[in-house]
Length: 380
Image 1 (cartoon, rainbow, N blue to C red):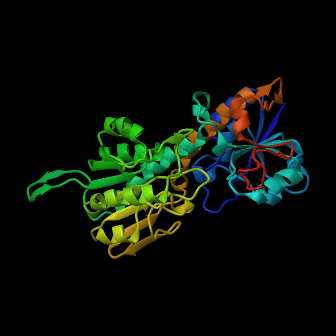
Image 2: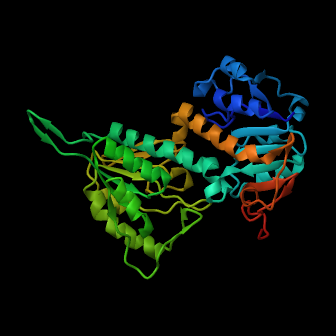
Image 3: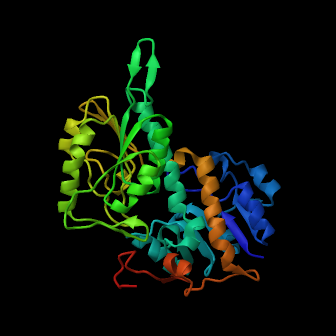
C-alpha cells in the first residue's frame, strides 16, 4: 500500500494544506495509506480528528529516519531542504515547488534521489484543467484582491440612490485578463463597480465583455502579443511604453486598479510607473498581485500597504493564504486529479511519454529534467 505524507507547511505565512478530509477519504478509498502531520490542517480550518474520521493517521515524528517510510509527499510549497533530504530515495514529492531558478531545490532533489512534480509546469491542455493549481489559486487571489481594494477605498463600489442624492459607482481598472483578472472582474461587477480591463491579448476581449466589463484595446503596433500555453507572452519595452500611455488616462479617472499581469518564470511587466501614479487621485487604491515577481506597479512592496501621495498601494502577495479553507479544498482536489491516474497496482508510474507528466516532472529519481528551468544550463 502506498504511504502518503501530508506535512505541515513550513513557508512563513502559509496557511493552506495539501489535503482535506474530503480528499483523504478519496485517497483512502483508492488504496492509499494517508498520514497527516499533527496540526497540518488547523490553520485552514481542518482539525486532526476530522482527518482521522476520513481514514488518515496522525503523524508527528519527523525526526531520524521516520520520513523514509513514505512513498509520496503532497505539499503546497516545497518543504525545506533539510526535510527533503530525509525522504526516501525514489519517493515522489508533488506541489507548487517554485522551480524557476531554484538551484537549491535541484541540488536537494539530486542528493536525496527524489522524483518531483512541480504544478507550475503542468502543460495548459484540456486533460490538465482539473489539476491546474495555478488557476485554482489565482481564482481565489482575484476574488480577494477586489475585496481588499473595496475595503481600502474611500468610496462605495455600487451606485446608490439615497435621500441625500445619487452616489456614482466606483471605477475599477483590471490589468490582465487571466484567471485572477477574470475573477476580479466578476467580483467587482457583483459589488456594483464599473470595470475596465487592459490586456495585451486581443483574443480575451470576448471573455471580458461577457462578464460585463469594457475592454481597453491594446496599442496599435506592428508587434502582436499572443499567449503560450494559456499565458501571455513577454512583450517588448516599446509595447509596454505604448500600453502605459494608453492606460494613463484611464488610471487618472480610476478608483481602484487591480494588477494581475504575470509571465511564468519572468519578471512581471511594469504597467504603472510613478508618473501614472502621480496622476491618480488621492484616496484611490492599487492592488498589485504581481508584487512578488517585481510588481506591475511602481513602488509596491511585498506584503506591505503603503501610501504614496494619498494613493494606497497594496502589495498583495499570497492572497490565497488569506482564504485557506476554500483554497486548500480546491488545491487538494487538483492534487487528487493529478496523482490518481499515476497509480497502477499500488505503484506510482511516472510515464515520461505522457505529455502531462513530462511537462511537470522536474526530477526523476534524482536526475534533474528541464535544467533550463533551474538555470543549470542545458536545453531540455
